[in-house]
Image (cartoon, rainbow, N blue to C red):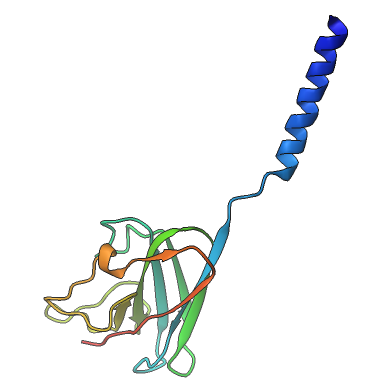
Length: 150
């Protein structure tokens, strides 16, 4: 009886070890975000990635999932977010001309360029939110975002 229990234990341990070795890690993807036609090459571009409903608008940049800053070359820039699980995402771009990390405003509207995935214009009747700006990421993807100057 001890021999049978010992053999069952050994078979169980081998099975668990083999299962652990063959388990695939969860799939992750890359998202490259490109921006063209900036009004100048001054400052930096801030790329902010969101992954939850209700996180946009986020004027103080406190609700984001990930954020990267990139240099501007010839009125263009890009970043790549790596190791992202599949799911819904939205991107917000800030052309941070004075490099202070915040959206500078005139009377009400931003004086620096801003952009969101799925938006080619922004206004009082077309305000960004996560639902409108989001897209599904299930493979390596490249998105181009238009930066809008008010």
